Every structure is written in structure tokens, then in C-alpha cells.
Length: 185
Image 1: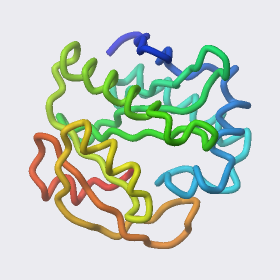
Image 2: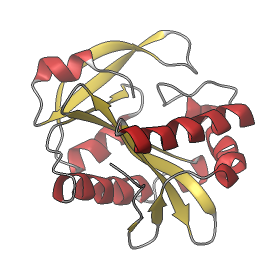
Image 3: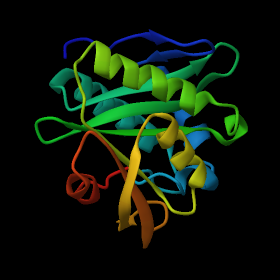
Image 4: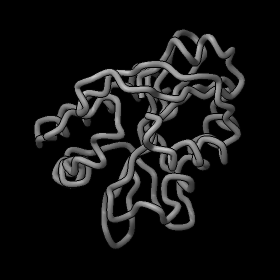
């Protein structure tokens, strides 16, 4: 995958992260309730964490290991992120987050549908996994809207939580055992 892609939804612009996004990313993820639901984000979340995330995300676009889209709202700037991470040769894991002031407004579903449609229609990706901590059922609702099927529960170490926590795993076109082995959300 050469250059990052720009996607438009009804309310958002989805685009690759840029260095200027670091402060807003830090502000949005830096809330414990947001970081708590993510697998890889530490808490507290510092500006350096956002800067490192932006570098990794753009490297992922360059080497075809990930496709990270920032959710840019016309009034509020960056409000979240939806992305795909490659597992092996053909499996992709979708993950997402949105800042707490935008919870429950459908932004994650809107962006995830756009990213999944792009991945399937433009890139030919057809095999996906995902997951969420069991105490975050709203994420499971998004995955079900995307056509994912739950396949089981694993113990997952979240960076912000610092302890193993039950996480539900989902699949869309991937054998259940693969989904259960690739928990990185």
C-alpha cells in the first residue's frame, strides 16, 4: 500500500495521522475511561505516546502492516481513530476508539463501516478479527453491526489496566482459533 487513503463519511474525514494531531490524540486518549478500553494505550497517556503512535501508524501505511485513520470532525478536530493491523499474510484486526465526549453518537460505527467497506472493496481484504474487553459491551455492538461473530473469550493484557482481563474475540471470515490467538486490540 503506497500512500495513505482519505475517506469521507457523512460527518467525518478519515485520514492518516499527522504530527499536528499529537495534542488532540493525547487529550482524547488521556482520559482513563478511554485508555482503559484499549489494548495498547498506556495510562496516563503522554504527548510522547501520541507522537510515537503517529510515527508507527505512518510506518504501517508505508510497509502495509497497518492502515490507521484518524476521525476528523469538522468542528472538533481529531475525535478518535479506526484502523486495521495485519496479522500474518491475510488476516486483519480492526480496532477503534473515540474520545469520551463523542461516545454514544455513532462515530465509531460510521467510521468502522467506511474503513471495512474500503478494505473489502478497494483492497480486497476479506478476513478480519477483533475484540473488546468484556466490560465494554458497546464495542461488541459495533462489531456485530459490522457483521462480526463472537467466537470466545481470552485473557488479554491491556497496557492501561496492567492486568489480564477477559476479552471477547470476534471473527469475520477467519477461523475461530485464529481470532482467539491474535488478541492485540
